[in-house]
Image (tube, rainbow, N blue to C red; front, side, top):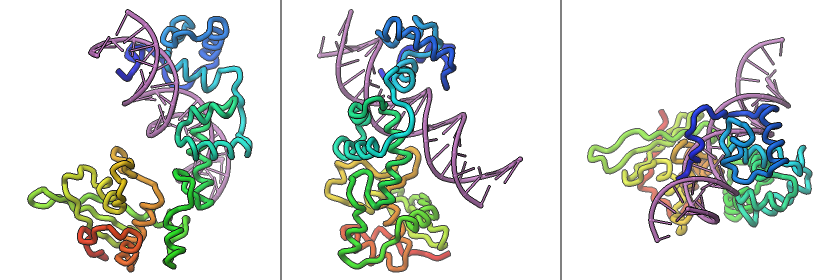
Length: 260
DNA sequence: AAACGAATCAACCGCGAAAGG
DNA sequence: CCCTTTCGCGGTTGATTCGTT
């Protein structure tokens, strides 16, 4: 299952398509239709797998594609549809004639997400960022987006060592800009320290239903809430901030900050 | 003009669903 | 049903382009 059988064959080209390849594929599909994609490369005389041909046709060669930049109306529609459909790019694309799911996905990830964040809107929930609401209610000073990003870029998470009985691992949130480090002790049944920190910081009742907000393979994350909380951790009033923002957080797992 | 980082975009990969034997 | 093949989707990567210093 999974990978196409054709992908195992030797001598298949990968990477960008040449004009000659485009012409072959276009001619073939214009004359005969695509039919079974896995047989298209052979019939069209291409050293590509069927999957690659399908993608090239859908994203580039199909005659009814609309090229060029997205209009403001299209962007607004994408935002509206995303709030209802989430990351179902093909369904969103179906509502925008001439646009492909790949094109819309790229636009969302490179442009729209950023614009929404600048407006203080969480692109995942389409609602204002939670911390801002909390801070207004409770008169807590928070960092603005620019400062969060400055701060976040100086924060790293470093798994340091296991305890002698191997039951826990101590991980450190390091703030390079302020030369400060907070130890966090994590039970070893949490295999990914980053996920464990996420669960520690956000122990919501439905956390089991939500996917982890950290990436387990790349060991990196961006969610603003985590960055804001990491920033909280690094500040002098961190106990107050954390207890206020995340009342169910287990403070005994957090060590005292150190200042090397 | 050169170097560098950010933004953009085309294409690949892996997975689950659907189809067919 | 079960197994294999094919399709389609969403996430991700990497090359290229653009903008800034």
